[in-house]
Length: 374
Image (cartoon, rainbow, N blue to C red; front, side):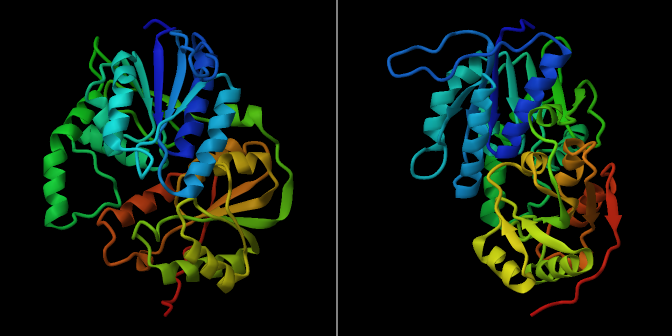
């Protein structure tokens, strides 16, 4: 492939954008440098038709995610990449309008980088795409399920999504052709299309796909090392918001971890609700921190606790890379099956156990069953 060909990255979350920056850094170290391109041109000026990394941010509607995305987008511009903010949801943007606006660039791109192969919007964008190379960067632990489903030839479906009612199943059936096309685009074809996985997750690439390890080299070079505090930090999760874990069980688990491990700060997940965080603060006395950047950057910049505790989630795989050589211990606490809701996906128990069991360079905390709360 021509190294100066248009590389188009499509991201919907701060973590995806961070991992695109890590991928660009890894590519520079492993082969022809991606040519840097200037920032968005002003009114009346035309963007140069040069090769390089063009990033399109498709923001969600929640304020915390949007704030983090704007911060990471600023860092990406400082790194010399072109960043385009494209509304596709909510009152200021429509999916159809965004699809029409992006279709020409998608058709022209010879290399496309995406962060969430399960996203229906990105799947729609892949329909007109004909890239010679397609790269999937981590969107958290969902990469594990994506690779498993691709290898089995299954339709792409998020691990925590349940079957739903009649209307939901009808929508799935109507959408099936788009999902099937996206799966074919994401499948390597010798001589036609290469597929690369850029990941921190412990996995084996599907037949024909390339695997490149994301060891957060860019983050380590750009930030830190951090100052370490005396206390222990706890990383929050959105498993309550996705309907996987019972909120009362979760509160009891956080209270127990805080008491047993001297936790002083709780780093909230960007999708955790204000009501839940308020209840956690009142019940535990923990300082609630709402990060303005992905946790890997926050931890690397510091200050950060000498021990960071997390439930099974992406950070038990990424933080050991980002904090290599700093003296920070990352610990994982398993999810007790008793904490799961009655409506949790049948895959939830095995998936969450696998996330924690396969993490490298972490301390595993003993599983303690939290009593039911009222």
